[in-house]
Length: 450
Ligand SMILES: C[S@@+](CC[C@H](N)C(=O)[O-])C[C@H]1O[C@@H](n2cnc3c(N)ncnc32)[C@H](O)[C@@H]1O
Ligand code: SF4
Image (cartoon, rainbow, N blue to C red; front, side, top):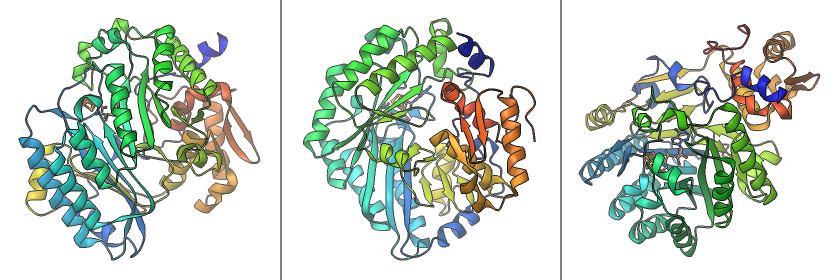
C-alpha cells in the first residue's frame, strides 16, 4: 500500500504524460520542417536499403466513445475512394524520389479503420505501394482490423496483397463495458474473424485490449483476458484507457465517475498481466505481451526492441515514412508530419506536393535523450556503454542520471553500468522517461530541470 501511495504521488497513470513513441513528442514539433526537407530526406535514402512505411486511414464507420485516435466517421465509401486516390498520388511522389533497390522491412496500415477500404481499392493501394518499394526478405505487412468492419472479400484482398500480421481491436468482451464505451462487438464475431484470418494463412495475430475502462472490475477483466486467451493471439497490447475528454470530445459520452481511479487501474493491469504471464506470455515493455517465439519477445530478449509511432517494434530500419493525413515520418535527420486535417492533406497532394506541416530537425542532445527514453521504455534500463556512441562526456551523462534519480528517490538503481528502473517502479516508466525530456519539463515531481 505504501508503494502504491508513492507511485500515485509520482503521477501514476497521469494521462498527460507522453507515451514516448517519438522524442521529441509530436506536440513539440515546429514549422522548421517543410515538404522541401522531406523531399531531400527521401532522396538521401541509400540505394538498396531497407525502409518502413506507415499508411494512415483517418476514417471509421462508427466512432467508439472511448477512442482518442484522430479519425472521422463516414457512412459512405465516397470520401474513402477520394482519399485512396490521394494516397496513390502521395505514393507516386515518394517513388519519384526513392533511389533504386529500396525495399520494405515493415508495411503497416493503421487508422482509424483501414479495413473499411473496399476490397478493389485495397488491391490497388497495395499494388501501388509494392510497386514503389517491394517487401524485402522477412518483411512484415500488418493491418489494424476492426472485426465489425471486415468481410471475406476484404480479408481475401489483404491476404492476396501479402498481409502477414493482423492487429485486431478487442478492447473488452464484457457487454456492459462495451455499451458504456460505445463499442459493441461479440466474442463470437471476434473469434470468427480470427478463424477466417487463420484459414487464409495469417498466422501472426495481435490483439488490443484495455484496462481502466468504465465499470471494469478485476473479475470482469479476468474474464475478458480468459476469453482472449481462448483465441490464442501471438501478441497482446494491454493499453491503459486514456480518459482525456478535453482532447477527445467523444469521451464526454463516458461518465467520468465510472472510470477507475489510479489504484484500481493498477490492480486491473496486474490481474491482466498475471493471467497473461501464467499462460506463458512474456511482458514486452510497459504494455505488450508476446509468446516467447514471437518477434517482439525475441527482440526484447536480445536487446533489439525498439519504439516507434506504432508502439513497440522489432523493426530496425532507420527510416519510417508515414503516408496520409497527420502521418509522421522519421529519418536519421529528424521528423516530418503531414497536415493534420484530411482536407489540407488532400489539397496539398492534389497540388502535386507533400503536405508536410510540422516536424523537428535533430540537434544538440536530441538523439542521446531519444535513445535514453527509448531504452527505458523498452528495457527499463539504459547502459552507459551503449550511450558512448553519442559522444557524451561521462560527467554530462552522470548529471542527467543524477537528476532523474533525485526526482524519483528510491525508484532507480544507478551504478557503473548505467541506470535501471526498479521492478516495483515500472508503472512509473513514462514519468521517469519524462525526466530526460528536455522539451516537456512541466509536471515533474520536484524540479528535475537540467
Ligand atoms: C487506432 S485504433 C484502430 C483500431 C481499429 N479501428 C479498431 O477499432 O479495431 C488502435 C487502438 O488504439 C487503442 N485506443 C484507442 N483509444 C484509446 C484510448 N482512449 N486509450 C487507450 N487506448 C486507446 C485501442 O486499443 C485501439 O484498438
Ligand atoms: S476504436 Fe477503431 S473503430 Fe473505434 S473510433 Fe477508434 S479507430 Fe475508429
